[in-house]
Image 1: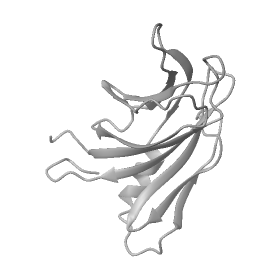
Image 2 (image 1 turned 120 degrees about the vertical axis):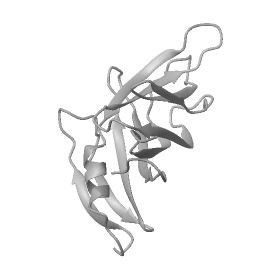
Image 3 (image 1 turned 45 degrees about the horizontal axis):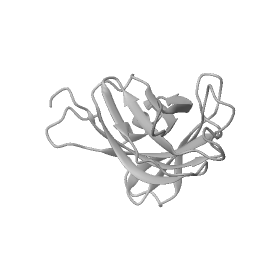
Image 4 (image 1 turned 90 degrees about the vertical axis):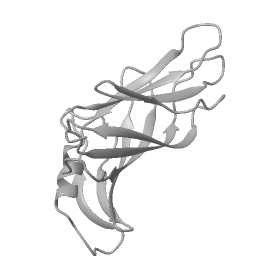
Amino acid sequence: MESLLGLLRIHVQKGVNLAIRDVRSSDPYVIVKMGKQKLKTRVVKKNVNPEWNEDLTLSIADPSLPIKIFVYDKDTFSLDDKMGEAEFEIGSFLEALKMHLEGLPSGTIITRVQPNRQNCLAEESRIIWTEGKVVQNMVLRLQNVECGEVELQLRWIDIPGSRGL
């Protein structure tokens, strides 16, 4: 518990224009990996624009590890097909948390992360203060696939007794 900084709640919102891997559609799901941790969303049947709206929670001990996202098409009688992958870092998000902000108007932009060749962002990612919390919204462009994006939101959860930020 002492080595734990806290929990990162990843709200997997939706996929946009995902690749078709079955005859006319796909049955996508998302796997989130960080170090040895691996979490999975439910499968959305026959949809290349799925809305998962699921929360997956990672325990953060080493904040320098990248978080990897994998999208797959669920198949019944064969191995699931890859539908792309992406990764992101949480350094900027943690820096915003360390500012220990209080009392800002909801919707205040704390910082912005620009898309570049070193990240998978499809557009500017904003870290904002909303309802008394720091959140980061991001749209990740999937790699190693012809098309597709995944929209996420990050939130931090402090754990009593953890090392904290």
